[in-house]
Amino acid sequence: MREKTPWPWVVILWLSLLAPTGVNAADTVILTADHWCPHTCDPSSGRSGYMIDIAREAFALAGLKTQYQIRPWATGLNEIRAGLADGIVGTLPGEAPDLPRNRLPLGRQSNAFAVRADDPFNFIDMTSLAGRRIGTVKDYSYSTDIDAWLAQHPQQVLAQAGNRAAETNLGRLLDRQVDLVLDDEAVLRDTIIRTGRTGKVRTAGRLAGGSLHISFSLARHRGNSLADALDNGIIALRRNGRLAAILAGYGLADWE
Image 1: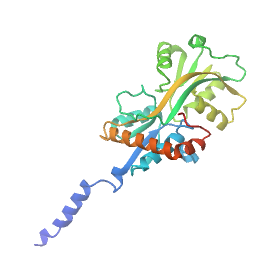
Image 2 (image 1 turned 180 degrees about the vertical axis):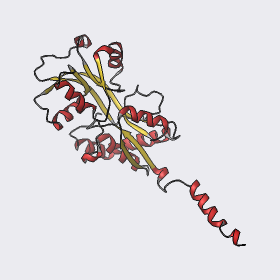
Image 3 (image 1 turned 135 degrees about the horizontal axis):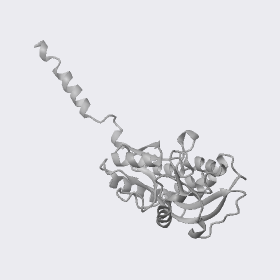
Image 4 (image 1 turned 120 degrees about the vertical axis):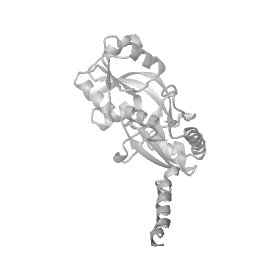
């Protein structure tokens, strides 16, 4: 009989291995993004970015907690497809078409070109980019038209990977390794100020961007339900004034 006494403990151990790794595991949404402040920021800086703040409060209304991980953009996309996270924050409508995404925007993108302050260049149209070396971010989508132009002129494009690609690209601009930096206008403004490059770099024209969303993992089998919960939360936050308050904290206004 003594040989049978461990059996209940074996059952308990076996059941514990089958159970979720934590009681809140199913109620936590894991989001990933790169450093693209003020849209998505490094949380160690004291601010996560307005899109992360909006998503966190929107999911909380559905009883979901949010965990935010900062990753290089290409890495984040790979992790989403592998099911290592639930959603990647900041995709355009035509970006990552293989992934489900929420319908309502969490933000807006406006593309801009940055040049050295002593460079007389001003962007007029795509033909004005002839002969110019352009610093971009690896695997970013800017807009359908811009993406097509960049793909047709690979010899002019120097794509930068990493979490702080905007900072690196501005450094390359001042070192004359590139002639222009293409990025989101708010990101360029935030990076120029934060890195002390005011007066050394200026914006030299802008292009239309698009709405920003969260694309969700198919591998985790709850992407569509999370997208619906996020959209419902955005509606509620806009109605109760929290969305406008979050944006105001970053010096921004509601896009609608």
